[in-house]
Length: 340
Image (cartoon, rainbow, N blue to C red):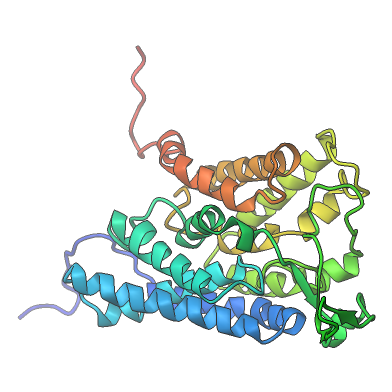
């Protein structure tokens, strides 16, 4: 008779957790909802249309590619990873982009960036950011223009309380402003209360610091992301802004608080620099990744012709992740380094 205490031998890992990819991905979707609500409140309901198009295109593309690869469809399509990619891509787009931009971007993110390398867990770059960089090249006029703040909502009226008239004499409910990090002299400077709430021009999901902090804090509480990645990333940008000589004649050129609250730093720090697939495996590696991303973000903002640096800095550090993993690999227990 076999004892109930018989030793069971199985393959590793021997310590398992109840968490799974679907649970984590749908938790990320939940954490992104506050930023989406803030974006809709600031820019209007068209943002919902953009988020929906981006997400549904990502899911359809996922199913289509899985069919081509003859892979299981139901479980993979329901794991939530495609939805996360679609939402994140939509959040990095201007609030008035044409409908085809999120469609093309989501298809590129899933079909090219994700599945070219073998699907979930094998991609080198963050799919949403890689698609955003592709759209930047494919549709530069659309991506770099028409930053709006609506006037029909209460939040918009706090800033622009004067009715605007277009060339045909008709009243319009939105005004166009330069992005808060634009590198031209005389660009409007926004108050910190506006930056925190999100009442500024920008991409759909990046403007409200409070909403992004709520989502990020939830992921940290659930232990789906490590707190030190966004902290080191944001702190590095803060320090770099203090020490770099300004090259633009604006009041916020060397204001670290303005730099960390404006633009897409919080969206990138909490939801993209923490991607478990495209970031290093060890704590030392993650810290190095976060610091490197912060340095690159500040350098791009200060010394390039592009006002924002979050997208390209994270993509560059994604590329360096295998190298970081190689040099931060922990030593095996009991293994000794041979002296030459």
